Image 1 (spheres, helix red, strand yellow):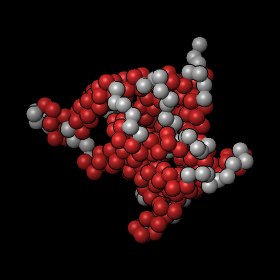
Image 2 (cartoon, rainbow, N blue to C red):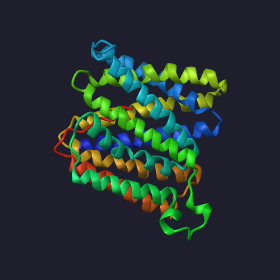
Image 3 (cartoon, rainbow, N blue to C red):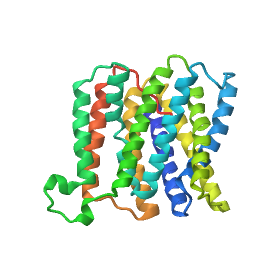
Image 4 (cartoon, rainbow, N blue to C red):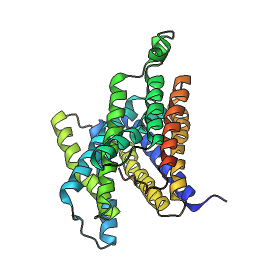
Length: 300
């Protein structure tokens, strides 16, 4: 019998996978990344505001500087992740996002004074190796394979890594905020900060594209699928099986591969399978090595 925590986690993974697929489709229509971020922020802001009011909480929270910092980190991460999604194959962009445990471990060591476990060191080594295999297998193999199969676009990979780093910063901040803030308030601050930042940058870039009704519907779906992912993850974390259910979040990679194949005719290369396998293995080793500790909720 599949536990309720696992079911919620799989629902969360599906929601986030559908969200990224919609982002890629909208990007193919020529909609700028900043405009996609702003559209998602509008939908998330409305839904989050209703949720905070439903709980009869103050929308401003207690630790405003840290909440604003969390919103800024989440906004930066989202912009980078969406750029990577629109410029990389869906599976590769998703796998690279799962490098965040490496950055989270380093940031937790520096800012939260947490001890680095042996499993975390193994995770870091596996993730770095997996990254090299995915991005530059010719570096590992000494240039014995063709350039066409050796490289992913460097700027897109850097954006994905910066997105993973931004996510890690947000997770560490969320861990500190969880001592004084309700999760709904933390979630609310993300679109509250992301919306004005993305709108300002979009205005400066002067590349707004008026979406047609189809694209507008897809933009709304991005916000809805994001909320499904967040709700599923939160519900999973509230069950007894949360620690083990977290491992099932990596099924998002499978969903992304299937969606990439079905919608965009993308087939992962052997190097993606090998490098992605190393990255996910490292993340899972780190996850199970930290099971006695409370999990950090993903709210970005």
